Image 1 (cartoon, rainbow, N blue to C red):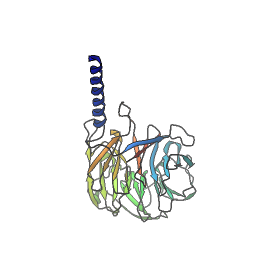
Image 2 (image 1 turned 120 degrees about the horizontal axis):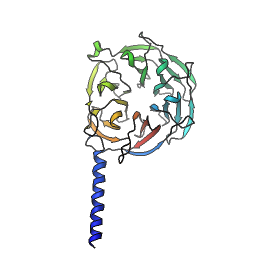
Image 3 (image 1 turned 90 degrees about the vertical axis):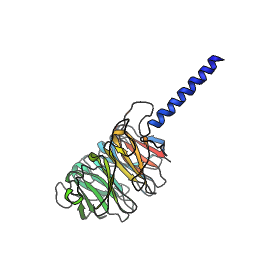
Image 4 (image 1 turned 180 degrees about the vertical axis):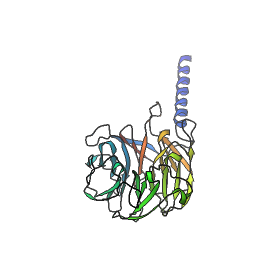
Length: 318
């Protein structure tokens, strides 16, 4: 009987330690309200396979568009992760890509892609038909130096991160230049290689200010509203601390999700920028270190994450 009692005590001890490990691996002190539902994708160049996926977008029907960056193409999936179609190849002709990065879908289902190393933005139909493009290398209005993340507001105005010009440019849905903002003189600090951009329901623009290790929020015209977050990396990093935040998105109810890349986790904030919860995107019970890069929220609250080094899409549900 003593052996049985000892075994029960050992089992309880192990179980409690597993719980402690689970909760301490969650970024910050709050428990996550998301669980992994599924994942799909693997390294390769076939349909449904991925090579270093970058940003991701979801349309109003729940279709998922992924920037398959090192395959120089876009892939489209249904809400269950079933492959539907793909388009693009390496090159600089219309419809071709040279390391694409950002992606966004407008109210009509058209798809916009920032063609990073071609210094342009391209527009396609939902079926991948090339429609038009804008941009060339330079510093003038409408010119770009390595465009990163892009986002659309409710009026289909496109906001593009012009990364190495350290500014944001705005275009209409026909890709005609509207305005630009974000200089150090205008906002009081330098946008240090922001990577992704999202638009809140109130029209404010949310940037993952990567090398500043924080999130910056602006009005649509570039007036600074707030900044939140600070640098923190490793086991001691808590909620609201970042190590090079990359992907950012806003859910239907206004929650802000951020890919905290080098802390290997997702952090969730309310619309005021207050930390709510977080979760690891790699194994809780091992030392694997994957790299969450892009993130998008579906109409039903599902969160989709591109794991840049595991070459897959992770799906989290409430």
